[in-house]
Length: 251
Length: 387
Ligand SMILES: Nc1ncnc2c1ncn2[C@@H]1O[C@H](COP(=O)(O)OP(=O)(O)O)[C@@H](O)[C@H]1O
Ligand SMILES: [Mg+2]
Picture 1: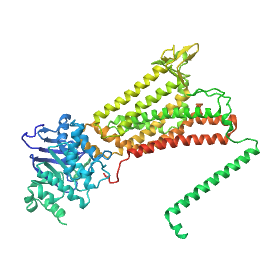
Picture 2: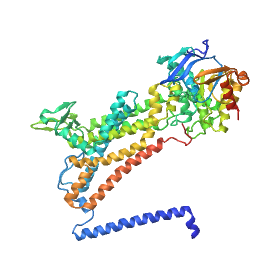
Picture 3: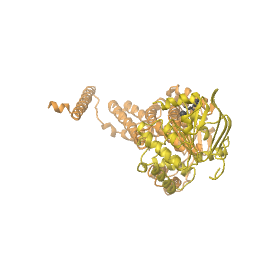
Picture 4: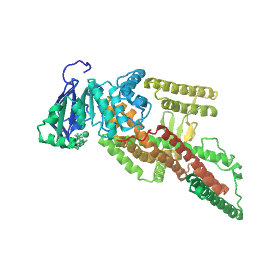
């Protein structure tokens, strides 16, 4: 779990099943993401993309199958869950910053509390990542004083401050006004070019073309199709995929 | 001239002046009419009576009281008694409300059911009935001879007897101030300079501050100690009655318990609402960073819930403060009862009621002002939040 060099996949999902009551939200999902790989997940609303990605850090509990993250199996063992959450960063559609803490505190709280970093070190790291997401001057402001795009970049910095080995993105640009989408995607492209392992739920197909090693298409709680972007956008096999693509690319 | 009237600022000022002017005129007219009517009935108005001695006794007072004391001193006694009852009642109600409110938001079904039942029952019984109920219970406790005893405290039908330190009055007041400082100082230190120390060190500083204040209190008590007496004065049976210690009369206990239980049921709902108002997203974000459930609660959920609760809680406190006037129903000499007795004995109805209203207005406005300050200090900054 703790060694970066440990071999094997970053995420290995086998026959994952998930129910909400009697509703079968995920059906026998199989997905393997290698270290350093960037995977884009797309699909119509309600197809189970969020549910799947949230199973990877146990924000949702799965009902069947196996999930192995960075070599640790995700089960009821609290130690395993904590260990995985420490190493897996997540960025949400609605940012979910802590509104009562300054931007800097948002970024420092987890390294100090979870990784027991001394304050000076946590602050230096936080300022470093705020620089990286291009808002170093906002460090002392509060989330409510920033634009949506800035808030999302803070959320990315907050996750990066834990120095995770894997980043999950759940529609990070869907709640943003069009002119702010680019600033967030730029940060994500930079992150990808530095070799971060990423799983992104997004409908930004330009982003998928540019950085994804693989595009996964989901519908009705199933993975319908997965392929490298070049192949995915030109010669997808299923009718459902074609229909979806014509909708998101059509205008 | 006409263009001046079009100016928004001028217009607002003018309206204010008109409003305040007509209001003062109305009040003045009322006072003059009342004075004339009273003079016709041979009652002298004015506040001279404040300096006459009352000639009657109060059954409970934190301040020294004799029948020779003037009215103004009795009003002060009443205000102190009201504040004492209010403080104890509000603190107990907050504790009860927090426990029940947390039970109502818990994931445990039994806890939720118990919390709900509590709220349904105690919120729907009028406060005055609850006061009478607890008063009846307490006055049916055993006589002083058969008192229940625990930790030097005695529980009897004549009241609750607490041991008090044999310490000079001034030293006692100073010690109380020091103890309040022991609580307030760490809280204040926590608010200022949140980022200038690491959280671990900040805790150290807070603990040091609390310890220093407590030590000061101990030193004050040691030096202010009355000579040749044990440090604590324990209540004890002498003949048929109990002597020594501090007697909390049944009237006070009944009121405090009733306010705690009744107010607690309202505060429970406020607490529950506050926790429900916290977005799930923030908690999920905290969990996804690897923070433990306890840290998620103390660092994210509780601070955000408190912010949602505080404005409504302030209203509730003001309301419960006014409810202390129930004291008159069982004969506790709170501010309201002192005023009522004053009216009976002196006939200065208008003046006494004026003092009563001013007093309560003062108490409640200060309470509201404190809460407003706190509210402003911790308000979430910015207007760009969503989700
Ligand atoms: N907490 C929940 N309780 C019940 N049903 C849920 C819950 N979360 C999601 N669902 C259902 O599961 C399905 C998949 O949801 P989701 O993973 O959020 O889809 P997507 O992210 O692809 O839009 C949807 O039909 C949704 O209604
Ligand atoms: Mg979703």
